[in-house]
Structures are given as C-alpha cells and as structure tokens.
Image (tube, rainbow, N blue to C red):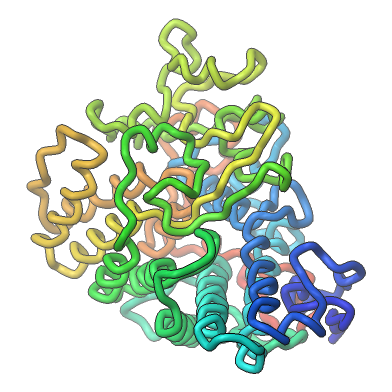
Amino acid sequence: MKKIFNKLTLLLLLVLSFGCAEDYLDTVPTDAVSESLVFTTTQNAFSALNGIHRSLYIRWDSQGQPGEGGMMIMREVMSEDVVMTGLANNWFVSTTRWLTHRNENAGDVRFAWRYYYRVIGNANMIIANIDEAAGPQAEKDEIKGQALAYRAWAHFNLVQLFAERYNAGGNNSQLGVPIVTEPITEGGARNTVEEVYTQINTDIEAAIALLDEGRNAKSHININVANGIKARIALTQGRWSDAAAAAKLAREGYPLMSEADMYAGFNNVDNPEWIWGSRQVDDQQTFFASYFAYMSVNFSSTNIRGNPKAISKLLFNKIPDSDIRKNLWDPNASKPALRDPFIDEVTLSNFAKRDYMNRKFVAQGNASSVGDVMYMRASEMYLLEAEALARGGNDAQAKVILDQFAKQRNPQYAGTTNTGAALIEEIMVQRRIELWGEGFRFYDLKRLNLPLDRTGSNHVDQVVAGKFTEPAGTINWQWQIPIDEINANELMIQNPS
C-alpha cells in the first residue's frame, strides 16, 4: 500500500486520507508547523491543535467543500426541510437528488471521508506526543482533551455517514468504519458499528475528564462542547438518561438568544447562545468556499442569486404566527408588494426572490462571504434534553425543559399538554424549526429510521429535487466508500450498491 507521510511537514493532519494514494505534502500548509518543533512545548502543540480548528472551515478540493460547513449543507439538502429553489450553478444539486453520496467516484464522497480522517490523524499525532512536551500539566490536559474530543467527534460523523444506523435494540455487528487511534498512514479493515461507538464513548469520556470551562476561543473544545458531543452520541444510541444529563451540562452558562440576536444573521460566535463555532476574520476570506456562499440570503454568488435556500412550506406552516422564528423565512418573497423589506435591503436586483426563502443566514455583505459558522448552540441542547427525557418516559421533566425553550421563542406559548408520542413529535418539530440549515436533519432521519418524504411541499414546484421519497433503512442511507480508499486499502469492503 502506498504511504503518503512526508517528514518535511507535520501531522497526519496532512494525511488527508489514511488510504489515499496521492501525495498532498509537497508544501507546508498554513495550518501546519514543523514536525521537529511542534511537540517540544505545549505552546507549539497549541499550533498543531489550531490546525484542526482551521480544518473545519478552510477550503478543500473544491469551493463546495468548506470544511464542516460543506458537510452541514450536504446533510441538509439530502433532507426535506431545506429546499433548493433553482439549479443556479448546480452546486449541491446532485447531492439533493441523492446521487452524489452513492457514487464512489464523487469528489464530495472523497472529501467527507478524508476530511474526518484528517481530523483523526491530527488528533492521533497530538495524543501520541503531547505527554512529552515541555509545559504545564494543565496545558497538556487541555490539548489532549481537545484532541480526544475531536477523535470521538470525527469517528461519530464517519460512522453515521458510511455505515448502517445504530440500532439500540440490536447487536450492531454491521460494518462500520475503520477505527484509527494511532498516527498511522495505512488503512485498515472496517470495525463493526458497535466497536466504533465503543471507541467513540471511550474517547469522549476521556476528553471530559481532562477538560474544564476554560479555552482560548469558541472554536476550541471545552467541557461544554465535549458534553454536547457526548449528548449527541448518547441520543443516537438511545441512551436517554445519559443524553439528557450531558445536554444539561453542555448548555450551562449559555443562555438562549434574544429576539435581536435571532435576527442578527447567525454569523457571529459572540452570540451568547453559541457553545462552539468557527470565527472567520476578514483577512481569511474564503470567497465561494464558504458556508455563507451557499446558505446566506445576501452573498452575491451565482448559487445564491439563482438558488436562494428556502424552508419547506409544510414545516413553515407549523410555526405559530407569534413565534419570533417565523420571520426568518418569507412566504411571500416572490411578491414585491408583500415581500419582507429586509430581503430587498440586503440583496441586489438580480437576485431571485423565491417564496419561503430564508433570511436566517446573512453574510458580511454582497461581496463578502465572511461569517462565523456554528457547530453547537444551547437551543440544540435544550431540545436534545427534552427529546431524551420524553423518549425515556419522563414526560413531566421533558415538558419543563420544552416550556423553558418554547416560551423564549414564542411569548404566547402556553405550555404543552401533549404526552407520549405527541410530546415527542412536538419536540421534534421544534428541533426542525430551530436547527433548520445547521446540518442535523439527515442524521435525525437516519437515527430515528424515518423515511425521506418531500411530497406535498414546495420541492414539487422545482426541477431540482429529483428525488421525493426514500423508504427508511434502505442501502441508500449509507454513503459509498470513496474509490481511492477501495483501491489503496486491500482490507476495505465497499457498501452495497
């Protein structure tokens, strides 16, 4: 098997896919430092850790691959709540048609695989070397804790994409993804889904034991973020009490945002509700390789001008008029006399105006796609806690948490009288509204074994969607392993086609 490690540059951060047959290490990237220096001190090791942070929002092979922002978009357009309203320049059209992820030759499939394994490779180099670095033990613990959390998070994303769903009632012996816990450069065989989740849980618990509330910036992982990752993992596994407890810990110190913050563009990590997110500064403009180049209302890209992202009208109609979130989408955008004036204020005359288009995400300007990208908010943790409590049979406490959240979003919310399945459904509707466009819906459909159903909504009015239904549990819910990995790794087994 060909190896791609090159001693001139640091980090399996630079090993973009541990089975990839290409050499990406011809130059030292800006998110890497010399291997001979990186682990001599904890301060230098923080530079290596910053390489992982940056990988979450920098451009990869194409402009449609802006790190985690690109993955968030893919997971949303594969679902029913984000509506692609036009072809524009065709970015993400094949993804929304459920074609890209089933194509082992697709660049986005390759990107997803090596992006998350790059994070794992970085983390492994840090974990293997940080104990010998000179510096305070507290700094070693922080660096190692963040690396362990990243390793858990990346394996968690990989197993959700490339394997069958975790079945809380089964033995989960189905093929997962390779577990990588050492700084190696050769690919291995796929572990079972159960084995992958065992490793994920081991890593996140170890991370929590090392971290506290302190960190240098919200792009870094502290104990709140680690508890939030733990809550997501436990929810996916159906460990309801663990999920609820971790979610409560994750949101401590992070209040729900105000109405003013709700309309501020979802582009600033200083929002008090944000637990984890990447700050993008002006001099690090990524132009079209940006989450906001595809999801914002106002950046003047071909994609947004011809394909403003909209909410499913079926979901929009579930939002009460008194709910402050209803103004994040405009059901009358195509009608000048009725259109939200904000849309005309921030867009140019050549922008398409489509009904139900979003004004939730606002870029820095028409000529700038700069905007901070969120990965975790307190609202997610409120709703995750409520869902876990309700699914665990604790309706009374689930109602308390739901009421705390819902009254902040809807001043006229009188409290729920629902119980059982109806209460869970109410919580899930709140989750879909609140987290629209933030990368959760595909995972939610898959973990709950629900079908894709776009029928009867505004998807029907467009030629873009292509696919309107997909039964739950079919092979199409698994992404194909990229062909580069299949060719380079003789132990790799492809998913069914």
